[in-house]
Image 1 (cartoon, rainbow, N blue to C red):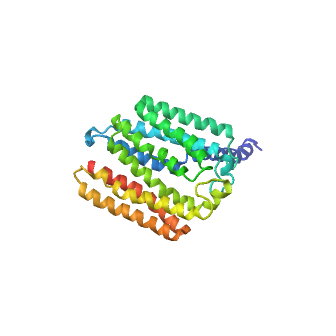
Image 2: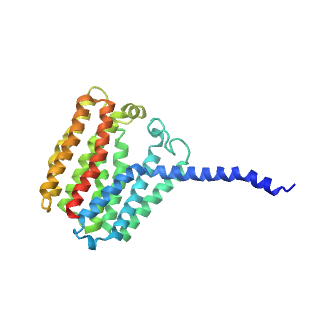
Image 3: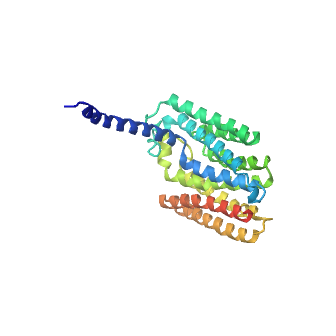
Length: 309
């Protein structure tokens, strides 16, 4: 009897297991980059780049756009990876993050550290060489402020959201600087819209998982009687400022009236869900506010881009 078919048959499960292991490791490294966050970063970077360009599609610089998005994604992925390295002990204490690759012990901390450093360095250098130095410096500032200001402050003060909203809005400035080489008033207006948007967005998450955050020692919401008041203030005040600020990008465009009407309706709708959350402060109201925030930002970008297109 020929032994080769038997050996080959026995090798098949081994090969399949190896493929599964390789796929699992790749999937874990992919999860380290926080792809769900990177999706919004891509949209924000694109909006900043497009709005910073002259409004002539026949001259649109597609290659610089690709370089900008790729470099920004690499830096953002490095930031997400290094954030999980820094917070690995605390992530393991939260149900929401306990299954992350490093918190669950599926990857070695040293490997994750080097992976995050490599992504951050390659992305920063790539932006400097393939785009411009200003875009690279903005990305480095976002990376450092996120890791060394916002991340430690999450365990010290509820005002960490105020600090964290700065690097969170930087992709818009990176995109604008990449396409125009400078930061104008319009660029800072776009930055302001994204900066304010983050407060109700994160308050919804913080309220939904407040017990989880408390268990891990995070102080994203104050403890005690002031918790509800803080969440309401951090939700409604930014939304109130966002209503007039969201109208500025449409001023001076050919479709300014149409933009202002659409932007006003969209922002008032966002405010409506923020107000419902402030009144009820229930998990379901927080989930609806979170969903409204995720829908709001891409639609606002579409409204800003459409008049120029």
